[in-house]
Image (tube, rainbow, N blue to C red):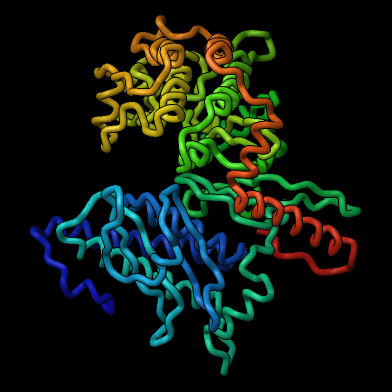
Length: 499
């Protein structure tokens, strides 16, 4: 092995060495099944990098990641994953392990083809490491696996240097995907989760009539997993029934190239987690209540959903968090990701010991695998309200099990600076017993309006556009790409490969 940190590795037991080698093997399989899939199907290098970064980060429990490729004159492609704040420009020039602020450690490895430096790859992990060699060796293994996979994308021509080829591809815009899924042309990657990836796509219709959508597809390595497919289909069926201005609209569901996809409304904005993470002072109270009141209105519509006979479905989201509350630059808030939602009489546990949902935002009854109803979602909204007001999570213990225990057993101390009115709302929303909480989402929204009048959609949108200029520029780029493709559609030309 060529990794500089591998020779320095020392294992305390054979079991520890086996776990490490299994991690390396998992990374190699990931490259084979994900990277090469994205490349061979011509989904583009940006999509491939996003999938690879997010999946590798989850394997090594990283909170942030980046990958940067260099041409002759500097970076030609930079992709960042996660919500961690760090200077990518500075990090890309480092090597090895370096302790950052807030108890974080950055691990950076070089991307090389022989003696040619292609760039760098890095991961941010929580904590400080007395012996970082194992993690660093794993990161270098991730980098070397990526080096091998990217060769098939660059497809070096005889006599052409790798950096020249990267410059050429960057100038042509070939880092963007050019493939189609069904009748959708892929434009830009949006993000990748544990089960699926989401991309900005354009409907392909005659006469240049088109619109942008968010296209979600099951990850290739999970496309044949019946449990994942069933959950994805359930999400699509449920999404088609939901209809409210504060819920994501589902347009289409289908299958192409052996994998299922969902086409849904594309929100031009940021998630609420990004808003909370803004590090320039506390959030205006009117902004917080504006976002939460809109989200609660959408949530109430989902809770009230009925079947064809007029019987309530007893729908519970179960996985609410700031990440799945999108705030548009038009000031409209959308709740999304009903993928693990459950209807009446269904428990939280689907397999022995497996509880669905994010531990940081679970209700006590969800954490203990009891039956839940809409009031479980209101507890999650209380946790989100606390985080938006205080700037930190209410019961976070740095460990999923301890966090769930704290949610079930611990009292929440009142932090300084929270007004009596906001604290009263939090006490009701975060009551351990469901019957002491708000009865409906609208009741909680009314309580919030009484505490702080919500900003209007116009005020909320203008504030977000001022705070997130880079994201707004990215959104404008989506529209620009659609305009160019719409003009090209009027001219005779061959179409991209369908996947």
